[in-house]
Image (spheres, rainbow, N blue to C red):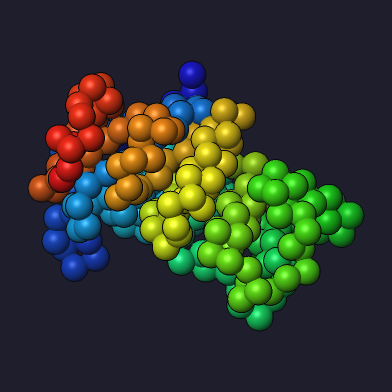
Length: 237
């Protein structure tokens, strides 16, 4: 498999200089479905932000994403890096004064798409993929939380990313809607697009298994086998 993210002994710091994660080893290959679990403030979001270069890596034996060396990469190359991934936020971050179609068109035009028919075709494709073809002309406030998150996933898929990064994508959703969103992300990973997501809902890990990393005390540990073999009540933070 193609290695997309390779972190070896990585230290990540907040903008104020405080250490967020120390000595992290983290790897993601093409098509993998990866969970990051841990308490609030344990460094999950910081790891994601380091991957898409919103936070800096201060020290590392290796820190590569899509072959880019994050320790030496110039800031002008960050947009190129981000174009290879889709980012999904907990609060959706849809433009409230624009329809679903206009939200998606805005992203495509901002990333270099020019032909109107190509833009319309791609928007139709991603909306069909997430089961939202009939919501094209709706404004975000006319949609439920789960529907808005599906649109956010459609937005992340627009440029056929190699990797989707999702920070607590189900945090504000009810359990049934959350399961539907995780199932959709799992289906996307089966097409070859890797998915990394943070979650506090351990029940999802049992129903939709993947690779599991645990953030705690500014450290990171892969716990896939251990977690899957332990009773649910023993796996709490």
